[in-house]
Image (tube, rainbow, N blue to C red; front, side, top):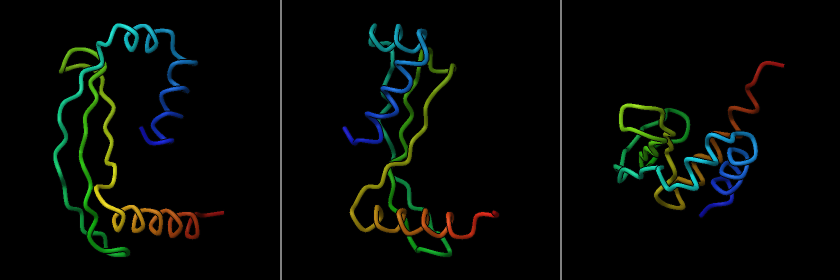
Amino acid sequence: AEPAWKALLHRLETRSPEFREVWERHEVVDQRGRTKYIRNARVGLLHVEHTNLWLGPASGPRLVSYPPVDDETRARLERLHRIALATEPK
């Protein structure tokens, strides 16, 4: 797993007894992701996988992520993050 996912999982497990209980019972359901293409005006085409991690019944709460599919998209997302930080109001 990626370091960001490990950090998120650790944070959720330490701060939420309910999450920890559900996670330990393996009731977090993985619905296979779908590849999406997003065209961003600043960095170009992003190739990501749309993933839903259901934290209970399918109609209940979920965690949605858009991890990059390739290194080029990862680099573009990092560039977009730097742009966002540089244009953030102070």
